[in-house]
Structure formats: structure tokens, C-alpha cells
Length: 345
Image (cartoon, rainbow, N blue to C red; front, top):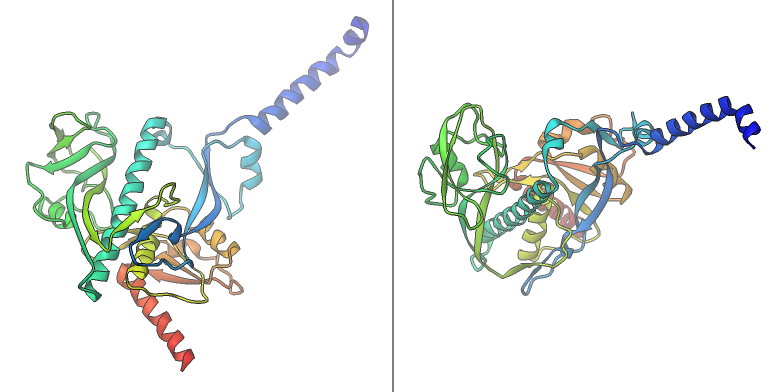
């Protein structure tokens, strides 16, 4: 046996290195993150409103995010526009699992609050019996390069200016810190913030002009009529599901049904003065998702539509509807219903 091994020693060494090399290609992780087409979920799975029914054909769209990709996998999906592959940034690598979980909770809660606030605000315009009472409590820190701030800190005032109403845009504009359609404070500014960290006492932190703070408005919903509740084990996505969640809640409140159509949408909902629909990531992968699921209408933010250039084919049965504010969403619904009534007549 030893003679045989010695005889083929050279080849054994070559084959062992080749085997290790192949294993590395197949199994070794890379520094890339990949987004792939995902799934759709009906809004009716997520909420209940007393004495109201949700339509079952309003859908949110999610994508799958692969944080660990092998060399072989990255080679397979390279140059395929169904997948979005990018190299992890220094910021991606800096976040701990705990911080990622906190960020997920912040964006999840924000999506729920913004959708409910917006839907009830619009429904109240048409039906005086519908009501919502809520308070702006401050801003949740989503990210900051200021070492004194932590993800999850609650900013309860800036420069000791009390929050006197529920309009976060006006509050930040008065401080010259508002950036339209962005959830970060205006850069190149110096100011100080008062924060609440869990059960700790309030703390004042100085912000330098080189500091970055990404935030989500922090609301407390005190009451709603009719009462809305979020179901346990909900599939509600992060901020990108905000606009379509808002539409689902609004239609339920207004008792509007959209028969014989499958509708999906993506985009944040912003509780600023215009109730803007904001940009999201993975729009191409979401388009392939709705296309696979035979969606009739796909509502997308205006700020994302250029990314679908060259992806949408004339033969596709999905009709893409571009929206910039929630008023645009309501306008589309009104136009669609008018078309249905015209067909009946």
C-alpha cells in the first residue's frame, strides 16, 4: 500500500489541492449580498378592523436577502438582472446581530404606525365617524456615526425645543434640519439632542457638523375608531410595504372592494405634509415577483421607475402605476372604479 501511495504521491497531491480548490469555490463565503425575487402577501393577513372587512386582493411585495453567498453562487447569478448583487460595505460589516434586530424592529414599527396614521387621516376626510388620536413622541435613531448615540435611542427633543404638535416635518423645518424625502437630519449642522435610552435617565448629546443621524419618526397611537389591531405572526414588511399597507387599511375603512383584480405595490409612506411615497430597494426583483404571481397592477414610487427601464416588456401583462404621494394612490383607485362603473353601464 505504501509503495502504491509513493508511486502516485504526486498525483494525490495534485488531486487534493484541486479538491480543496473546488470546495472553496462551492462553499467559501464571499463579501457579497444578494437580493432575489421573493413573494407577495395579502394585506388582509396583517390587520383586523372592527366591523370592517379587508379585500383579499391587495398585496405587499417582498424580496429575499442573502447575506452569505459563495463564490460559486455569485458566479451563477452574475449579470442576471433578476438578482442584485453588491459587495458588503464597511457599514454592513460593522453592525452586530443585535443592532440589525433593533433596526428591523424600528422600521417594522414605523411601517405599521405610518400606514395606520395615513389611512385614517385620509378616511377621516370622507367619513367624520372615523377617527384617530396619536402623538409624535420624537425620533428613533436608526443609525449614527456619533459614538455617543446608539441604534434605538429615542430623541425626544432637539436644542431643547419641545414637540408641540404631530407634524415632524414642521418641527425639523423650524430647526433647519429637515431634508425632503429623506430620513436623516440635514448634514453640516451643529446642535444637541436629548435622548431616552430604555429606562435610563435623559441624556444630552452634542452633534457635530460631521455627524450623520438616520431616523424614523416615533409615534404613539392613542386610539382609533374603528379599532384596528395587528394580527400576531404578521408578515408585515419593513418601510417598503408602507404605501400598500396604507391602501389596504384605507379601502377597508371606506368599505371599498376592487373585484376581479390583483393589485400589489411597494414604496414607503411618509407622514410629512404631502404623505409622499418614498423610494425602496430591490425594485427590479419585486417586479419579477409580481410578474411571476400574475399581478394585474403594480404601484411603484416615481423615484424608482427609472430602474425598471429595460426590464418591463411590452408583452408583460403587469400594468405599472407610478405614484408620488398617497393622493396619487387614491386617484388611481378612483379612476379604476370609474372604469368599472363605465363597463357596467
